[in-house]
Length: 137
Image (cartoon, rainbow, N blue to C red; front, side, top):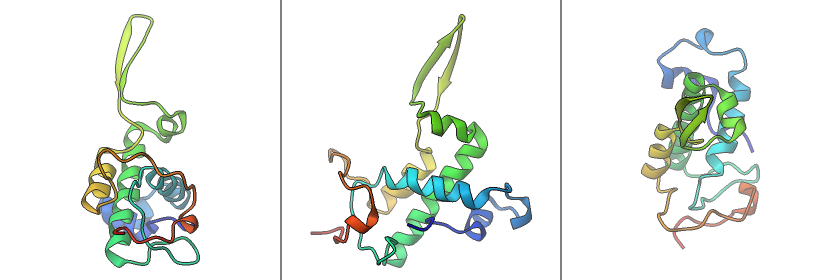
């Protein structure tokens, strides 16, 4: 699977020039795409490489990946790698509110694109190639 967004799309999302992006922006987009994919409850038609075939779906997934990278730039990628979930972390008498693993703006993009279906369990497939199904069955 390719990243859902390009570095050019990330620069546009952030309102920055491509030269202002982190040096590892392409890697961050790949990891962000993996994270976003894990939250897609509704399927999408995919090509042989596992990428969405519908341009609107590609746009929503690109927005979600860019929002996830933006989130990691604010809270650090290590936060997402550690799988820290929403809640309060307390240690040594100090409490800190922890944001969720998925960026709020990424969740909004997935919701607008129809990828979040309330009450549905997470999909059991792990690769878009396994999901050659239309979103609306």
